[in-house]
Image 1 (tube, helix red, strand yellow):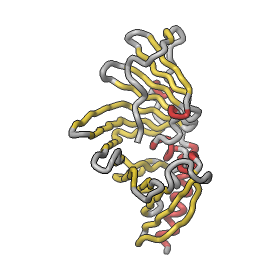
Image 2: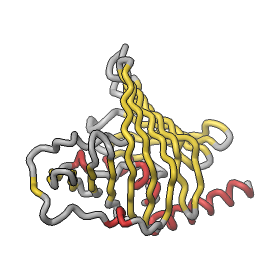
Image 3: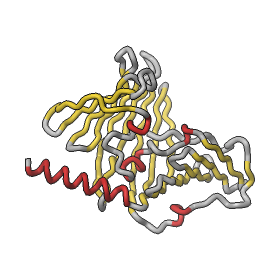
Image 4: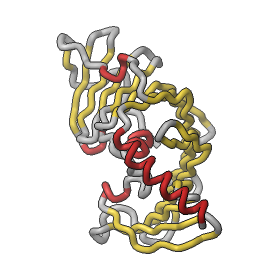
Length: 240
């Protein structure tokens, strides 16, 4: 009981401190496996406590993306000095893993942001708790989401359709504790596109830095960048 109490206190302090934490940077590798093919995308992410996020990609050529929780999105290509900008809910980074932990929203993995409410909580074993979420508005979104926490840290998410079948699941592991901040360095997601096919996405974070003075945190698209209607460097990459 004493250890559990200390852990609760630590997580409460971490939650408040994380919300006040100014900046987190990391190297990110995303591997997507589908139909026997593997694609790898690498980038560097720079996130501050407001949710403004800058990503730097080196392939197929150097380009930058800038997003925020309001859905504002810009993609800048320095080689041509072109910028593609848009604003859509799909572009919001409020569900990005780094921002969820930075803002202290890891307790429900941002489900409340998307209209889900806590339906039930159950003890699944020593240190394991399962929380079940359902849409606040019936019929909006998936039918049910199960979130499993181990020692108050999320380790598993499962999304269910109305028929009770799992449509996607996510595993969070390799947690690392930094100064007033904790982050899972490995996230594996499985999306069941059909009864026979699935997409596996593995995201690995490394070289995590806190409160650095890297100028990329404050990157701004040059004022003289030429606006374009289509992002020639590719669409905004998915986050898991």
